[in-house]
Length: 450
Image (tube, rainbow, N blue to C red; front, top):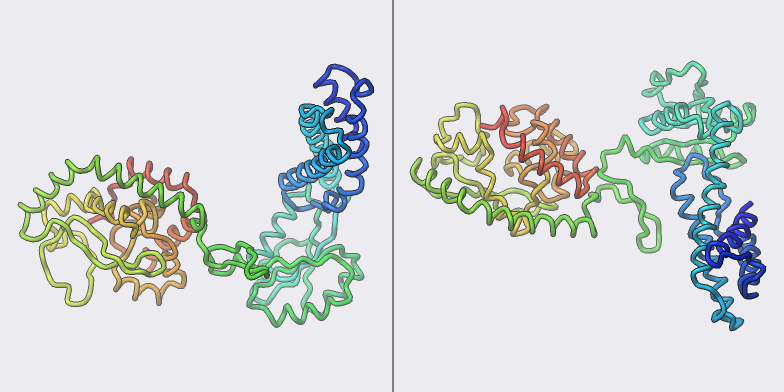
């Protein structure tokens, strides 16, 4: 089908370019047509164009096919140079041929997969599956296989640990009690695939399962249960020539991190220029409200735990902390009259644009907490310190959802950390822009800000 599609595309491209049939063209066009069609027949399998894409996104498959066709056509063009016929070859015809060939290859596959989806929704062309491990990842794979019928997977049985047995609620799915029973079940029920979704911590079970399935002749897929692991990412990379998985590398790293830094610097410069008149007014108000400096600075943890001094407008009377930072509470006597207004409206945070310009903070990110609070909550909340894998921010995902101000309970802090980690795991520059806009319209005030 692919060879016929490319042959037809070559003729169609010539009609588009010259408004005449290919038989009337310079011979190199016909030679190249048959050369590339034959080459595609030989090389497409080597490019894994015909590998199974069941259960996988189709967009990468289309890109893969287009890349394979481009490689074949490039070899054909090089061939025309080697036989000294490139001068007679129409470059525009080659370009049209690539476009029409790609389009026909895509259309044929779209029709093919539409037909397969229809058959699979009717229960045909399906594969019987056993899932080993029924944690969050195993349950999610079962849900997707059950709801997305066009993939053509039918989960017949599940082996789950004692803690997950109650989660198997589908009456049509059988339960396999022990690992040793899996092989017999696979053979008796004519199973096509085994999906292993055990977590990395279940290394002993994985080794046992590897031995038990050593003679099994069905497809075995291992999908590590990373959903139950407390990690920021699970991106596969090539490290020292070997595959490796990054467990706590934030999304905003590498080139994306450079773009975020440039955005932060440009935004902070613009903000500081525009805020100069407001800074002067606030400074005068602080000076008249109580004796002491205009700015307040305090050590915080920044990117990867590096300490820096965060800047704020002073909102409290001068006092001694006695080695323990006490969070501001409602009707706190330490807060000055203008300080109460500044804290309620978050205007006391504006000097942190200086921190952004210095590279210690970002415009958007998890809010930096006092060092003593870090020491307390890192022992009570398992993922608390992962907040420091990115630069702290002036505003953040947690703040625009109302989790700002006093965190007098572990539950409140846990909720804030949950939102912070969601931001780190799902970061994008567009997400930063949305948070800034949201902050501008509704994020400056809150019931917990005092």
